Length: 412
Image: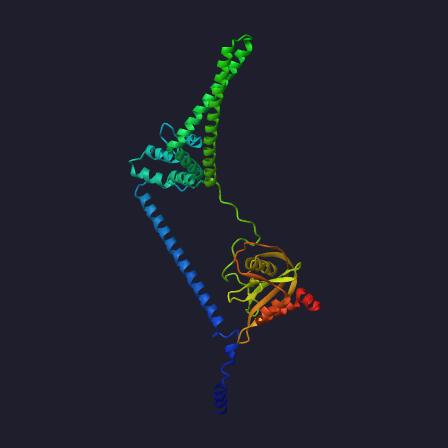
């Protein structure tokens, strides 16, 4: 009776079951979450096992069906891999190598090549031979077609052919090109005639004045014609050059992204998150210090206050790499990590460890204009940073323990 009364008094006071605050208790939210994840993983594994059993049963049924067909007198199926090395069969007059040679030389489109192959294929009437051919050499033509269509050079060739077709279909541009070609021929002819006349005049020492005036007049008119033709040629050449530059720009590969040791995209999610022995999430960050101007860089958090650049430490990196990566992703700076300021534990309202901070000191070497998260960032002096971090006691304490904080305190 006394024990039950004491228990009732404890409940009335509000103590409750103290075991509920233990990390090993099964009623806590974290333990229930772990149990749910394990049950979900077990269910997924069972689903995969059932799928594999179903596929194995279907394969056995297919083998049994093939065995019954062979027993009934059908041609025995060959399990050898000769079909992988068999060359594509073709019965047309221009078969195999000649068609591929025409394609590589640009004389023939791949679509026409495949269409001619499909038209020249012969079909067998015997059902057993058709069944054997389907099983032994069924994928040869389709594999070749797929390889040709997936070839990146084939896509480039198609773009070049489409660009050439657009030039041919443009009557104005074709007219100018033809005129340019005709003018070049006439220019060569005029140059040849000019050299011939010059040689004729030098070989004849006596000429009358009338012939000289006529020659001078004709030379002047020819020079004017050539000047006009040269201007037309320059205009056509400029038009063709601009079109060629546009075609090269369309066919050019996309520009490579600027190199970064951490990649161009920020990491998201907590699948690879690390936890310490107290099941506290481990977070790494840096205090970026501009040693030349004696200031620090803070970034805006999701709660619109300024904090250190920090983030989760993942299982494929060291804690120093995680701190440098988060500083790059959130603050957009590179630098040298000179040392660990300290590691700090943050507790929840129940007194359980919630977050384990690893805070480093970084001396900035480069400030980027573009960075993955593009958060708002701002420079602060020591006193301004202490005021901004007044609601972040861990960060404020680490700032005081850094060399920047010690030097600022000594100077004041």
